Image (cartoon, rainbow, N blue to C red):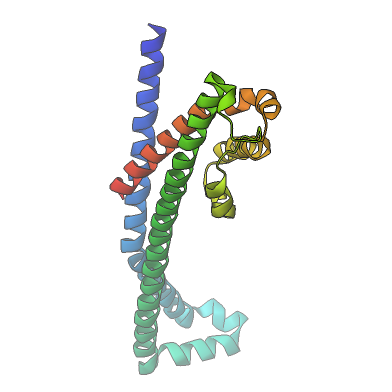
Length: 222
């Protein structure tokens, strides 16, 4: 009964996160679509405020010089034409900036997701080889290389370099500890001292597989 309850909570949590993601995308689309309209209405309100100030008696009493300038400019023909042209140019510029930023953000998210998938694939292939080595050494210690040395593969980890920081922090920390042990394990005694960490390779691989599945689903949703 408790297992069913936790499973339902987990499913409801996933549905809630999916709804939040859809709501966020909907809000983003609405902001992109309606932001020029909102800015246009704001500028129209500002124009009406300028006209109000031009007709306000209290402004003439308090600031006669400012009132004369506003009244002269607001009543001229070029004010309406210039104001409309400025509004149109500002709206076009704003809309272009919004679309550019959104496109860059979406493209950047896609690139990061693809890069993470590539990192995961590279690490999974390398960890599969290292897991086979751990299994062989656990069954038969004499299977180590001539000269009594054990060699694990860490080339992918070193080649990826700082890109592995794109992975979640907890997973990145586990991989750092695991690869540190793999790099330092060169003999049977090293293997015995680090055996508890090395035997967690399947757990790390399972976590990488879960992350790969989640990223693949997000890429399909995108």
